[in-house]
Amino acid sequence: MKQWDGRSKGTVLGYKIFVYVMKKLGIKAAYVVLYFVAFYYFMTARSSNKSIKYYFKNRLKFSTFYSILATYKSYFIFGQTLIDKVAINAGLRSKYTYEFDGIDLLKDLLNQKQGGILISAHVGNFEVAEHFFADIDFDCQINLVTTDMERSVIKEYLESISMKPSIKFILIKEDLSHIFEINNALSQNELICFTGDRYFEGNKTMQAELLGKEADFPAGPFAIASRLKVPVAFVYVMKEKNLHYHLYARQAVFKHRDANALLKEYCNNLEIIVKKYPYQWFNYFDFWK
Image (cartoon, rainbow, N blue to C red; front, top):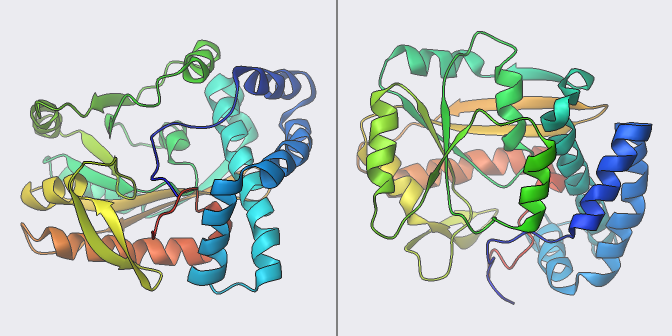
């Protein structure tokens, strides 16, 4: 089973149908269409089905029957987060409610005037965080460290119908020039956000236990965060019922330059979130190999 290749599934037509239904009939109507779309992927996506069923059955210890049902539910909730992302970026933010759990931690982090590093994961819907931050006294530039692998006609279409995001993107480059961009942003008391749960073949990795089994993680986020003398926090934006989101922030406690300790802390924290929101694990590839 192949490793994640950095690209999302779907077609522009599929996204256009959701956007049309959402604008004409509302977000809940788009959720209804999603029942059929999720079932399509449930019936046809053999590789991702195998990976996500392994997660439910072997890592979360669900029964075989419930693992099958959970696979469909996972696709459905993932689809909901995509719809929510499009809706919020398209100006429908007022339709959603939210609550913060740890916002004071982030404010204290910024008060130190050193900038800070946030490490998230492909769970929940972190990409909508900036719209919720805008509702409170949290005036800070967020920089998302990423690759440009997601550039596609789908992304270009979504950007054409969305409000311009305030998040800046720092692209990972082979010449390591992104390190200078990160340092420059931190010097201006900005936040740097990494996702710590995916890597590309050929990249340096680290190993740690997650949900009872060793897995590979990208070395970059943990090496950089452990070496820079700035505060580090784990952040997640998790979907709940009735267009409601719950934002979590937790401080990372580790020794300076100890990347392995930071990774272990990350995995322990991520386990808590995953066990509370088991259907929002959106790594549809052979994560544990």
